[in-house]
Image (cartoon, rainbow, N blue to C red; front, side):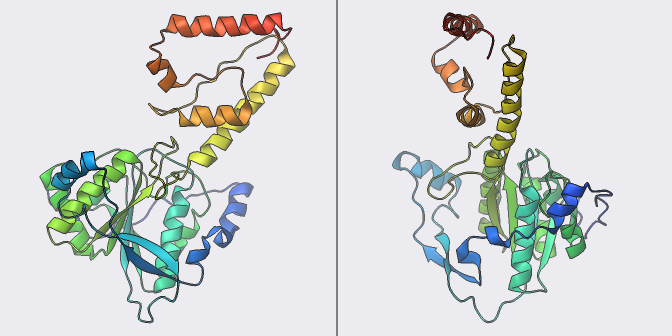
Length: 321
């Protein structure tokens, strides 16, 4: 089935807001902009980021058209006088992370400041929306209804991948029909890998659409210092969890008779658990990587915790934990 190439009417506007959400909608986040983006910036081409020697050949084989493209950095300067309008698409991919709507808002505000005739398109419900051509035109009214708010409900997200030749071809057909100058994939490691493969396909087939990845994952497992020091969403998630764990700790002190076990999300990377532990100082913190490295069984972990409780009891701390 051929993909759609015309916009879908937007019907996902929020119907009601709390008083806190109203305050957030009105908040001005310009003060958080990096100084280099205030008053205009210029893009500077730098030398391509080289792959590690052991992976260089494999990467070149997988990404022959894009493996050696220049690194682009922004520097303070005067933007060009003639600024033609641009068309940019955005797609949310994978699980939710705090800040997703403001990433979209930042892109929207940026292209409108570049040229007020610029247009943003939002692909609905994840990567499937790209190759199916399920997209909307994002207007000021739509954008202003989601600024500074959580969730990914403005466009919806999904865990689909663009994998088959037909899906790559349909994605290019949709982007060409809209005339997209850029497509921003807001997602984690899998989503950005998929975006890199899509960028390779576009460049190899002469499509003008540039694919850009915005690193999103609350797990904090998408890093490439100094280029990606941290993914957005991680800090907010950790502080939110720390607040909840801190409340449990206060409850433990109040009850004077229980130990509480709190399970935090995180796949193979235990970055969230470790960061929250550093913020709240629990009596014990179990990290998946350490459990795997030590080949610990459930019995081993249980015995370690029991020994810790016994040691605390001997120190007169038996009633809190």
